[in-house]
Length: 236
Image 1: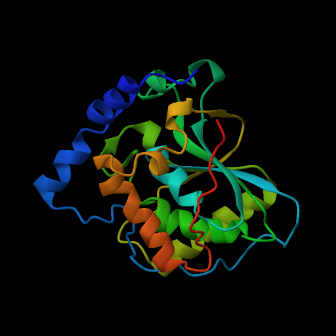
Image 2: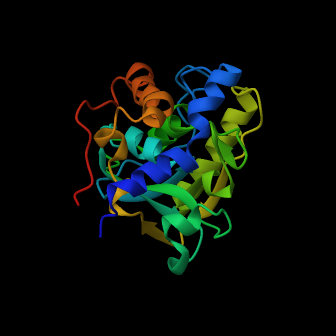
């Protein structure tokens, strides 16, 4: 059941309140995650082209922005906000927000590899969706629930992800080491309805406007052939 609107206000003012103050205090760039500010190189290793849909789960801070980015990617069939890394019994926003459930706010990306490769999704994930050098936090959000992680659903995804991290690290494209975890996907639990499509439904939310809309703009700028104007939304 969709939670009442006040819960949105509680989420914004309490759990993301620092996003309104921190940028003012330390003058962060409006592009919160594009550390390289340029398109990343293509993976040296990628999956073979296939027409069978695949699933991968990405964690990289608040799921609002990660979902919003991948909903604008050509070839993505569905991008769902949710939780990965913990048990079903603790896959509830209020519990995950405490930071001790093992869960990370995550986005399950279902995609057509004949239209967008897994390697291309990795390029977008590492350069647009989040900053892979931030350990257990992302922008204004702090805690293990905001960690950087890839949850692979096949051996080939695991190999490509590890190879790409090694490739990026060797190229020294980031100022700091990549801290992204690469884990097998053992379970994903969809988040509450009010979290789905949040970027699209609440573009005027100060958190979205400052932290997440620039990510979508960077997607459009850095990867124009991957960008779709109309996002593919989660049906409620």
